[in-house]
Amino acid sequence: MVNVKEVTNVEASKTAELKQRREKAVPRGPYHVTGIYVDSAKGAIIKDVDGKEYIDFAGGIGIQNIGHNHPKVVEAIQNQLSKFIHTCFHVAPYESYIELAEKLNEVTPGNFEKQTMFVNSGSEAVENAIKIARKYTGKSGVVSFDRAYHGRTLLTLSLTSKVEPYKKGFGPFANETYRMPYPYYYRSEDSMTNEQIDDQILNKFKDFFLTEASPEAIGAIIMEPVQGEGGFIVPSARFVQGLKRICEENNILFIADEIQTGFCRTGKLFAIEHFGVEPDLITMSKSLAAGMPLSAVTGKKEIMNAPGIGQLGGTFAGSPLACAAGLAVLNVIEEENLVERSAWLGERIQAKLRKFQEKFPVIGEVRALGAMCALELVTDRETKTPNKALTGNIVEASWKQGLISLSAGIYGNVLRFLPPVTITEEQLEKGLSILENVIAQEVEKKQP
Image 1 (tube, rainbow, N blue to C red):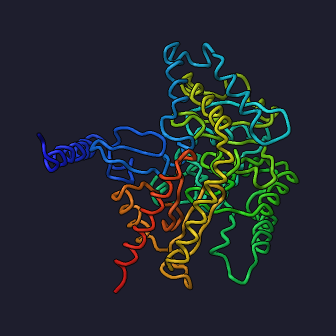
Image 2: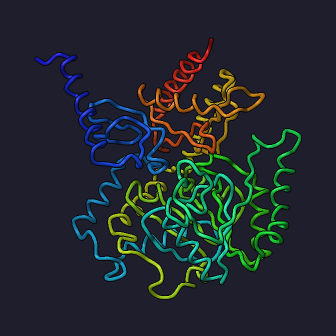
């Protein structure tokens, strides 16, 4: 009989072996947050090659809203796999691409006729949305916002705001891209109300159109309804509606980037629904296909039809396996009432995080929209100095104790949580308990 110590040593060597192989075969650029190597995943649980289980509060960075390896998604992929893997939609099309487009046309916000196209990643969706907007309006300028994240390709990096690690050393970037402020109420002047902050930013567009680019040069404004990498910053409905008015008054298309916020993450199927705005174009990816590479652009039919035949697409765009997964995801969301569950989950997480805030002075703010929740950590609440070091320590200590979480924010001081909406109550409570203990331990370490 093998004793426990021997088993541990044998298993630990598997992680060490993979670490060595990774360092030899893979460049350092594709960074990973944890030191684990995954063997399997189910629901909200990841098991590593050593047999240790982790509660997943990261969800593959918002990809696993319906949980890892949902049986209906696995079945849909397997059924498609037995028929054919790839023919290229641009050569020999297939029904699943059309059916998924029909469903997205139906469920996305907007009381108008829509059309949908598919590509492979969030960056590709954003790039194609910009191409479509430029073709339709005949205007090439694009406005994004401070702290925005829209992808890692050249154009999407140009729209992305954070220099380190995303942009440093990769320029020059695409021209005719511009940046405007985005509300960050927690870090604005204490003397200003949220309404005054909104008005201040919206009024800046008047100067922008005089000093930077005229409305005749701007084809689109793209925004995340909740900033993801930027730190889960939630704007007011008043701000988003004011932005939409500026677009309408100046013949500018409004693009909602729902790549991280979509598919019931925020207590709605799409975050933009919270703000009473119908975007002209909407970009989607991540949880759309539960981990299969798939992204989409949906928008008004007349806008989507602006590019000519052959001007949009890609060899793997809208692959049969990914479309099968996407159809299964939408069915699961409907059958399991996951929009409602997301709202419930958000309430549970927020309530617990606010108790943490009462207990730990290093928590400056709790932010959330539905189940898209975050803590901003500071050295003290008076100065609001970002506490990046503590944030990193908590992320590392958490996964070592069985909870996978992520940081975010322009200052690297935000803990963000994206657990599967299907997480069980027991798993949720255990994960939050681990988080509370880790915060307490890491705060205690800092005491003199």
